[in-house]
Structure formats: structure tokens, C-alpha cells
Image (tube, rainbow, N blue to C red; front, side, top):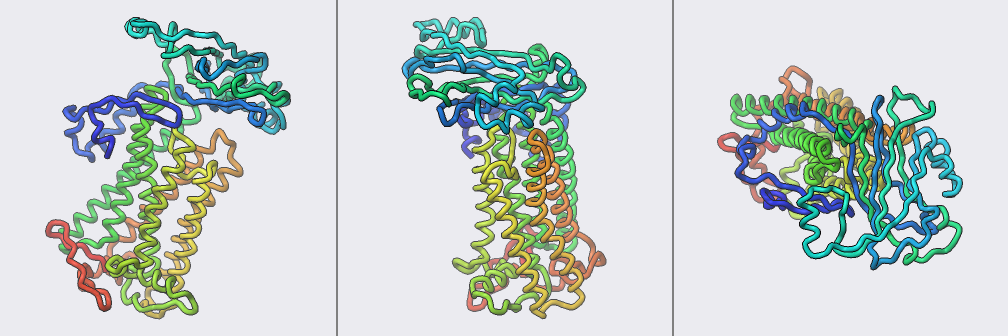
Length: 544
């Protein structure tokens, strides 16, 4: 919402310690008149634009005796290209000066040396001999801007040469090519580089913060020459292709669900809420991918992408996951099934029994104040959103929502496992209640297996990726796994709520297909008021 208000204005957007100047498209531009679904179809056209390959980032680093090194970035250079790394470090003169630069270095490690030799090394002194490049860092004092000097500098259009700041600044600049020389490595394979800033002397002598103050840095890494103006790391190229493919599949599912909804509404004059929730989940999935593709396109141009688009991608994905989990829980507990209300759990706390019964009848649960089932659904949705935002504090370049590399990702996977256990409890209660027609027993068993598989699959995929896949390929394979899981889940829900009555026993007996049952949008809870009838235009929305 804040970004909608900012359309047509330039704003400084902070990403961690990075400030980016973003131009929001003005409201009068023609593209804003195009409906969203047309933009969903037009998005692939933009992917045909000439890509560039590199990344731009900034931040700060404070080296101490306990932390003598700072990992700046990891970057992949495509076969046949020679990459380039350049960085500027700054220290305000008011903060002090780096008094002893003899061991202050930027080290570049090739992948083979980083994982096998440098990373396991216990100390800085034992780590740096395995670096392929060692770039000395030497600071020089640059005086502050004088009156009118900054305006003249901007008019010349010089991006770096002659740059000053509003105060005196200690400045150091380093740069290096990224290529495997001397017969080291295979030039026909992608070369992975890890870049660190370190000072090994700090672990050997005590140094005050005034003599080794915090350093601000801005760096650019290119996957190719400067003339090629590249901004994408080679290991992210396949992820972008995967997002494009996933986007097309999700869009096809959305169109299929929309057509089924339109057909059902025209034929029966009513649509079940479960189908609408499935459509919203697919819409969120497609919107997440659309925003991620926009972020990719911005990243190709400027090296840091579009924070707003990437943020929306994370939150749309989280809401899609939350909706799928909620629908599975409710159907697993008996929602949309005939005569499924009235079953009870034995020897369990009343709150758990009330939750299961509320999931069987969500319309009733949401009519009551502080009903545990309604609270559970809201917690599921809010928790997914909160974890998505929390995870963004660990990776500001590309969505890492399902990553086990950070603590929020671990919490998300644990939460998914807990929901899987709740699903098992609800489905077991449904089968043992004796209120479900015997014809549904086989379907319920298969649905319980498939639902449990969905809840457990992503934690399992994340654990396997973090255990067996090298760090450089984790993002790609985690994206493959999560995309496969989500596509299968959404496709399964589309089939569940749109297939003809002859597809299974569920489709013959469920309230989704049964046109003779009460519409359910006016169900009254025991001792409660009748729920107002839900309509979308002339179409009635079933909630039974």
C-alpha cells in the first residue's frame, strides 16, 4: 500500500545497509491501464530482452579479534567469460582511521579451495594461503565536497573518479579479474568465487575500534567484461528459467480453475468456497512468480533488483502456502464431506476436539468468538507471512523463503511438520467417527497419505538439499523442490474441487458436487444466529 502511494515518485529504499534510488512508475503511464491478467500474459515477452550478468551490493564490515574476516559475496562466472570484481571501502574520518593496513586484504577463493581447504581452516592465518588472489587494501584521505563541487562532478557524469562525500573520508579501492589461470580449473565449467575481507593480524594483537573502525563498502561483480554490462551470477540463471516455467504452469492452473468456476456458477448458480480458496491460492502462487520475474528483470539491469517486487514475491508465496495448508486441514477434518459433523475424539482435551469440529464446519467456527479452529486458520496465515518477512532479513537479493540456511526457514519447516501432525489427527478422527459413508473410506485413506506427503515433502526436500547439495547449488535445487511440491498440491486441489462426479467417491458425495444439499451459506450454529447468505453478484457461495 505504501508503494501505491509512492507511484510517480523517486524514493530511497533501504535494503539492510544498502540505499537504492527507485523510480516508481507514474500513474499516468499507459501500462497501468492494462488489466493485471493481461500483464500476466505479457510478462514472458519482457524475458526476451537482452540480459546482463553481474551484481551490485553494499554494506558494512567491522573486523575484530573475534571476527577477523567478513564474507562479502559468492559469485559464479559462466564458462568462456572473464568476470571482474571491484570494490570501494570508506571510513568517515570522524570515526578514526585504519592505523595498520599491513594484513588488511580482500581475498578471492575459487570454489575448489574454499570448500575443501579455506572454510575448514580454524584460523585466519591458515585460511588465507588457500586464496587464489590477495588484494591489498590501502586507504587514502579524500577531503569533503567544497561549495558547488558536487554539482560540477555530477554534470561531468563521472561514476567514481573524483567522487567525494559530505565529510572527510578514508577511501580504498580494489579490483581484480575473476578467471582461473595457470591451468587451474576447467574453463568450460562455471567458476565459483568467494570473496572475503579480512585482517589476520587482529587475531594476534588487541586493537581498539578507533584503530580498526567499521568500514562501509560498495562492490560490483560482473559475469563478463564491463562492455557486456552483466549483472547475473551464473548459478542464478537456471533459477530464473525455472521461475518462468513455474509461472506458465501456475498460470495454466489459474485459467483452468477460473474456467471451472465460471462453468459451475453458470450451471448451478452457486460455487463452493473451497474452489474459490483454491483459486486464490493459485493466484497468489502466480503473483509470487510474476513479482519474482519482475525482480529478475530489474536485477539484470541494475544488479540489485527491485526490493518491493521481491518482497511481494515472498509474501504471495507465503499466503499460497498458508491457503493450501488451511484447505487441506479443513477437508482432512471433514469439510465438504457428507454427514461428517458430530464425530468426536476420545480421551483428548476439549480444545483439541473443538478445533477439529470447527475445521469440519469453518462457517460455524468463524461465527463464534474466539473459536480455536478460526484462531488456528488465522495463525497459519499470519505465521507464514511473518516468517516470509523474517526470512528476508537474511537474504535481500532473491527470495529464500523455504531456505534452511537461516533460522526462519527452519522454523517454517518445523511449523509445516506440526501442521502435518494436526492433519493426521483430524483425518484419523474423521475416519473413526463413524459418520462418513463407507464408500468414502478408500478415498479418505488416500487423501490422508497425499496430504501428509505434502506437509512433510517440503521439510524433507529442504533437509536433503541442505545436507547433500553443495552450497552454490542450494538455491536452485530448493527452488526445484518447492516448485514441484506446490504445483502438485495446487493441481491436486483443482482436480479435487472441479472433476466430474464420476471421478471418485468423493466427487459423487461431497457438498462441492451435490447440488441438492443446503447451500450452507446460511448454516446457523447451535444456539447462534444464522450466518448471512454469501453472494458474489448473483452467484451464491456455498460453505457447507
